[in-house]
Image (cartoon, rainbow, N blue to C red; front, side, top):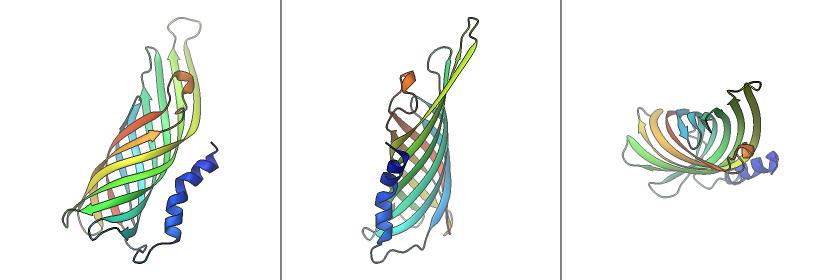
Length: 199
């Protein structure tokens, strides 16, 4: 699937909704923030993410819906077999819907659901103990469709700043850039901590 087609799928639903917001929605209360954490599957390593959140509408007197755009980077590694070292750099672009439920004035919980793209660059290194080969390296990359399902909680430190944590499940479809090495679809899990600031 071409990159342009993946981008169109990833942004179609939020673009349509934002183009015709319902009565009562506004762009006030926009928030920006970031997360740091650990991502794991066959591969594991650190993950960084930047989020922007735009309020959309109240689904009920307590449940609020907003649109979230995320740009993320993860650096993951995997000890494939003795002598093999595999590393992967993931760039993720994911628009999602966020559903937030305040528990009290200080705490709220939320859930995310989205679809986006993940560009995966993989490097494989093999240390051959027998000459004349020595150390062999190869690299490949792919762009894949992905989904995101997440849950988390916030603590409001003040009216502008909130801190929290979340768990993400990110199925990445396709060959993860590593079809030649026996790796296919990856389902990664992330544990993240971060903050959001209301502009």
